[in-house]
Image (cartoon, rainbow, N blue to C red; front, side, top):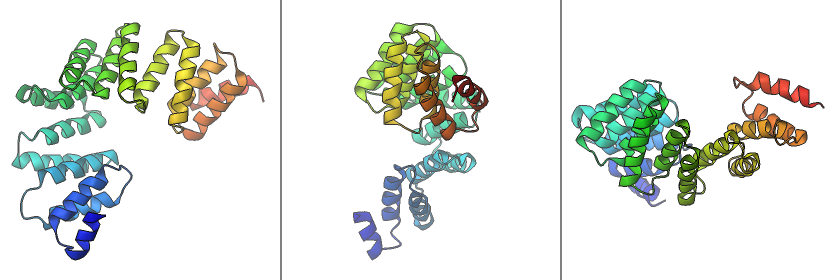
Length: 268
């Protein structure tokens, strides 16, 4: 509100537009952020790398990947080693399926800045996507060594360990992420899926039911619960509830047809 009040008095103040835009960009759904970030860039007579990085991140969050990359490239043209622009550019490449390019970009980042925890964590995610589990574990562990409270790093440790078949240590990593941030739904989903694969079905259902209460729109959680209740937990009525929630949230999902078939098999 202070920034807005300032802009009433000085509508052409690029710094106020920048500060308000960066603040609003933290709220992914806020469309006003783009307006202020672009206005800050238009009005400023000097490079604004942080503003461009913030705008790039906002654009990427709205699936406008080419525009996001253009913002990062503008920053890197003036500041070739800008860590946030390089890191975010790599994330955007990853989001568009260009995993090897993203990996090369991030390896260059950690070569010049070995203590960049975010870059190590993002390298872990990319290595996992490429099936390079040892490398994923190495970078994820490096990220939490640098920032012990990085929940994304603990989650990536869990993914790498689970992929290697080390169920117990994977579970501990997910639980550590949730100790640090109970609202971190990605770790809760991964933990629930791990428990289901380990045939700890009651624990899996408890974990996933907490998840869908926390994030009701998360169709993956409903799908997992539907499978559990339709299968080992043998509760057709609960299975129907979660399968129907899944279909309502993701009617065009690749598994939607098989879920509809399962529902028909469960009866009216």
